[in-house]
Length: 126
Image (cartoon, rainbow, N blue to C red; front, side):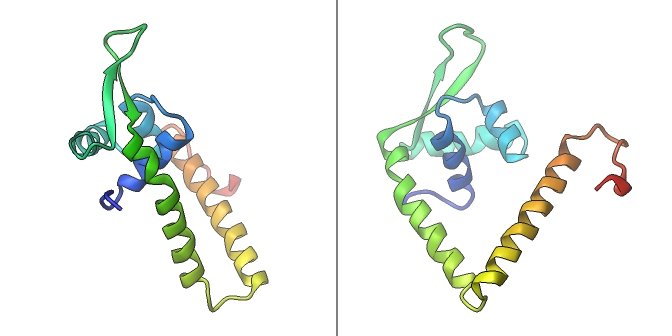
């Protein structure tokens, strides 16, 4: 596998929808656009993606997967599944279901916090 730590997340965003702008990728990952640009530069040098100007708006740059970037999807997803199985091996099926439910709620709450305007979070609402 040729992806470095964290690059799998950027790849996953493009696997879901190729051709996003660095800003769109950053928003999907809750990171800054400069972080995405820096990672995309490394990934372009490694042959995992290309940058191309938007057809309609020349000011925008879009990130597109190469064949090599697409080819990493199956091995990365397999590696993630194996890791998930390893870290939850001591749990029963019911415990795994409960954990997934709890993590989903935590993710939704965290996402709501990130999307709320500053100073407008009401802890009683969650």
